[in-house]
Length: 71
Image (cartoon, rainbow, N blue to C red):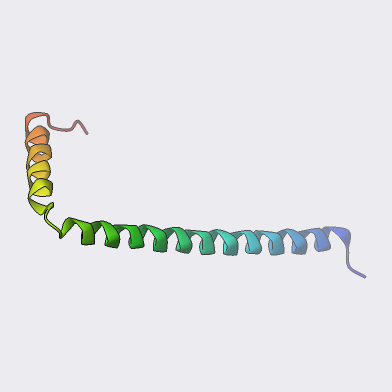
């Protein structure tokens, strides 16, 4: 005969493992979605907006030089 505490422990471990599996699958799905969006974004940038992106990066770099981050 199985003790109630042992059955509860086994059930809790099984539910925890299932929850971790669901979380892992969800994280993979979100990661794939994010990577897909980045790829689409980069494809759109190749159509002529690269210079604007470079200017924006230079501007951000200048701001970081003028105002060093406290850390």
